[in-house]
Length: 299
Image 1 (cartoon, rainbow, N blue to C red):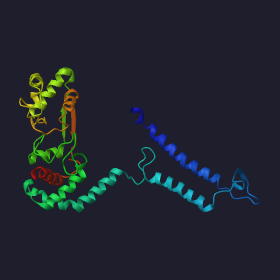
Image 2 (cartoon, helix red, strand yellow; image 1 turned 90 degrees about the vertical axis):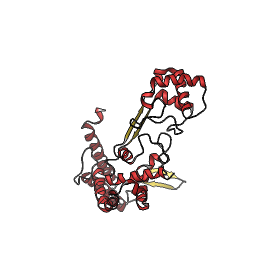
Image 3 (cartoon, rainbow, N blue to C red; image 1 turned 135 degrees about the horizontal axis):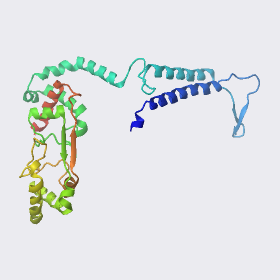
Image 4 (cartoon, rainbow, N blue to C red; image 1 turned 120 degrees about the vertical axis):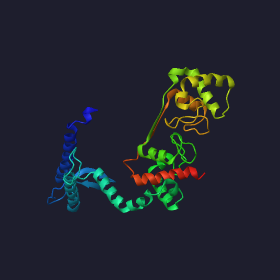
């Protein structure tokens, strides 16, 4: 990738851009020659027997519109970024504009969030006004993954139940939103082999009461206790400190079918909850924590 980050490409882009605009002006000039006295020449193109294409110059008003466009393009490239790494005389960028808009929003809406910052989470859960503001934060920040109602989808946790992979107390949820989470299930296909993976998956399904065969379950249990209890515990109830899910309940992040569990055991899984510390203020995260917890406490 080093060839795409060298200074050559800045010059390459700048030259092509400027030459293209200047070339447009040259072509425009060549097509703006004043009409000579006498009959106009034709291009030789004729349609419907008598419709001839004449080689007339562009109307002056039309030509001037194009000239204005060329001047505007050059002026824009001088003032704003557009020529490789050139930042423009005004120093504008999407990042500076975003930061400016955030500062204005903080001044305007900051007092609203500060009113709820001093209250504890359980108090906010009982405050309809706080939950209304928290819902807007959730829809803007979290609904893309967890759905607008918080019910999640395949690979994205359901926030409306009582099952918490990392813990469901206010402090832990706030830590999750602030710093994000990274979950990794290592692949076991090469270790267990094809039949071993099937037996282990069969045993995992049995932990939550799904239909199982006693012989396959016994074989899978031996494999589970030899390889899986370090994370999921001897009873398969997981470990919130590690983000290892509980396999003994009816909650399945990726699905409970045998084929899905076989895929999980064989290839492993990787989950990423992004950190929102740099996106949301502490007051917003505090309010969002209350809203997220309210989704599960409402049931």
